[in-house]
Length: 423
Image 1 (cartoon, rainbow, N blue to C red):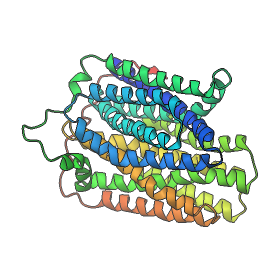
Image 2: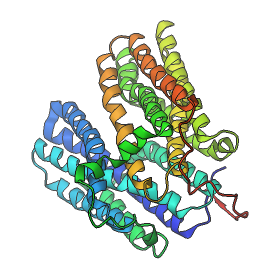
Image 3: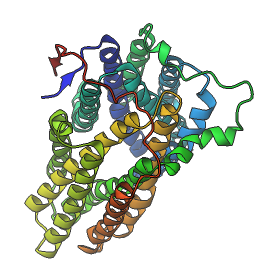
Image 4: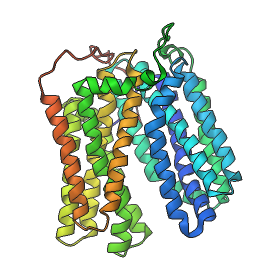
């Protein structure tokens, strides 16, 4: 059972996260409908390009925006990112050409690349107790999984009562609610602003790459970079192969596709629910490695399913295992960062991790796309990539440490028992 920490600041921030995710989920569906209207037969190519732009914005703009906003309080950055997304959504109904979609998508995803790392870095600053923070990470993962599962169904239901442009208005409401909730926080969040910059700040490029340099300098984070590669290798088949397998090779319809994708989401959701129990028995490193093993296992299952005659039940099991593995890896990352950074470096490292994790997708997505028609060869190639990530992480984390780990805000004695409310 996952509990929401009994902390009013976190609960308000969590509500803001849910509102923001709802806006993002509905916006994704609305953009797909807009692309279909403007591009007709080329809608798939337009959406593919938009997703590429999204990843490029995540990788390139997150560190740039971190450096640009480092003097600002976190509240200001979070509210500002929501306002930018709100304004961009307001412009989407006015779009008449495909290139305008690309420009707005880049602006929207740049704002998201600003919001998400700062939001993630804020939670360990708000929650001092390690168990509370673990519960917060699990709750955040559940919010992501439920958004992925529920947003398409919610959008489909809304389309029965509103015209497609109406989804833009509802998505904008989610971003507006997020901004209001973050802006309403007093005291604790405003006090977690990054420390003031020195009188002579470092050059912009050094500030923008500060988090990446920290990650490359410490074995804990070098291992995490390798875990990102393994996570991306396991995610790529779910995102790229699902349509090919269900529609082309099995000749099944949209319901079967939705159920297959839901199998991955359910695996991730179940894992997030079990995270507080798992975290009491496994360290974040061990949890991440267990997730990497599960990810490799999912790719083995996918390959074997192909070799023995592609079947829907086998794919469903493989996708479920992929959800378990990716959830274990994704929930370990913020715990590792919180354990090995302090208030001076947390924002930089969370931002670098955001970019690094999405950079891995820029490698595995093209591989999955290029091997989608190779049958068992596709998941086999991605299995090799995942093994490289798992092996690199294991070797990095088991090598003799050159120095003691950095001090952590979460290496504290357990706090007194608190009364928590289950979600």
